[in-house]
Image (cartoon, rainbow, N blue to C red; front, side, top):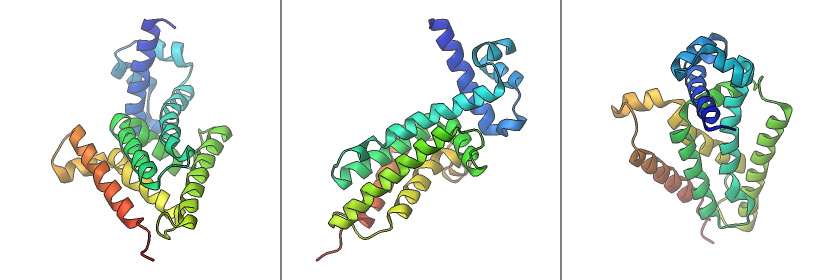
Length: 203
């Protein structure tokens, strides 16, 4: 793949993420994507063939990091280290891929009509694996007797809100764009709350 091809595809993908996040799939026009990317409209079809394919590429661009964020759960590690690493990875996704994160959230809220059965199963299987790992920690007495499912859901909500509800966060903080230090502070705060809440009960 040539450098020009890679660059153009990246420009289109980034522009598409923003347009789909702002307008939704149905209201987004390929001409708007091309204009935002600074490329002729035919380039969108040359590289991605259709708006549907481009939308699926945007989804794939966020699914891969989401799956990668769960890597710490794949080893039988210390709960504090695993949960901390997972939370930091999820916050990085919200920081680095805010538009794709919004697109993914919207897709899920609408019943995941554009995700393939394989993608759905991959995501669900990884979530089940993570929850089973948490349950093992509970059974061993390594963390408190919390509900493993709801702990995972709470982490999702706490980390993804920085992308999915960025307008509200900007309005409350008075910052048009959060700095890296803000995301670090968010991760530190969430980690502190989760780890404190998961401390094993005293014998």
